Image 1: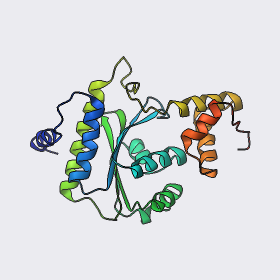
Image 2: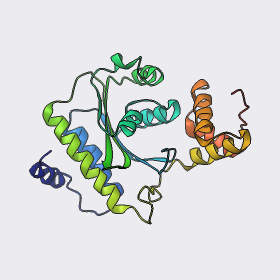
Image 3: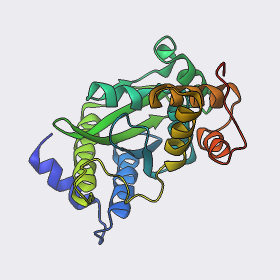
Image 4: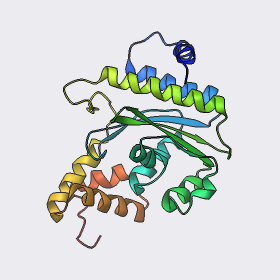
Length: 232
């Protein structure tokens, strides 16, 4: 990553706006334009275990499918990038079946052949990921990788510059925060007297087993239309 390229990419955003949502959306679009990928998304995480997540922007429906899939099964490139604090680059998703069995099979069903995830972080402060995918296998070139890393850095600072309040991981400014998942996790935690982590795992397992979006299962739980039993 060079300072000169950083300045060049900032100029390529070509957005006469200070609105963070608009700027982040342009970052995603620029990834598709110059990094040789089929789609891009930026997901911002809340504090703690990352249960609270928000899609700040996505360039295509497949990116949204991949977001919901990873939140449902709890595995995939974004999950790994957040845990590792470094890029996760999979040039051929067919090789990742043992690593992410649930994610890989479902992602391939929507014609995803390669995935690349870059954490948005400054030091130990991790606020999200920049997630890219391709419909054909193949590594990012050196230039594409450099630009993706630079755009992830730009996105990180766009998020951090707009955060309000004393909590540097607050994502309340986003309109697409998946608050219902966090609410449902709290409900299940109390009902079954288990930890928030275990409660989220139960909800994810139910969503995956019934092939229902995580948000929909969560809405059913919050609305008291669904009650997860101990054995679920």
